[in-house]
Image 1 (spheres, rainbow, N blue to C red):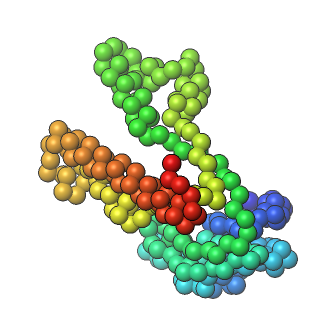
Image 2: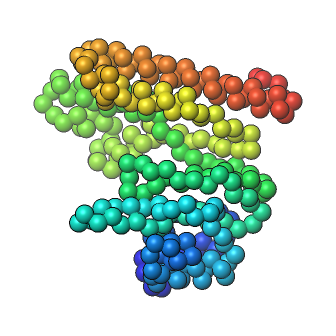
Length: 241
């Protein structure tokens, strides 16, 4: 977007309290490594007019790319907010992408509303595809012909309905994901992809290792959720059903 479309899009965000985005807009106010561009000037005017502020102190670029042997850097990924919020521990980490991952803790004084999110049941999806592939081996036809539905659109729509469900996030929802789960998730993914110490294993041993790690991952998830729920009940004087 540029020109009027860019300014119109910014105006559509006026009702928001907190925004995070790869803005792709340069302005010396937040990107001292580059000169102001039109998008950056328009965005600065919009932020001042609507009372938005950038969360966290400047701690370097959030984007980097090597072009013709030259390193290009900029700060184009930002948290912006307004209202009774206190930003803490804003930091960024370099990932495998050309963008940094930005993380922050926020003290939120407003009321947390119920949020609905769609989640995928990867076990069901994997099972559906596995069965379709097994049927393909028995006959001379593509595996996707075995998916329910008469047209490609119907097949995708019905597959989505079978594998997706709605997750409800409320004031009682607690964070339960921690470093132990992240580590186990990496171990499980490496086992499935045959990386690391799994490279030396044959196919049968690799599958066995992956299933073992996957079961451990599921057990950890159940335990972490249960611990968080019990802690919530203790804090709020509720009974654990």
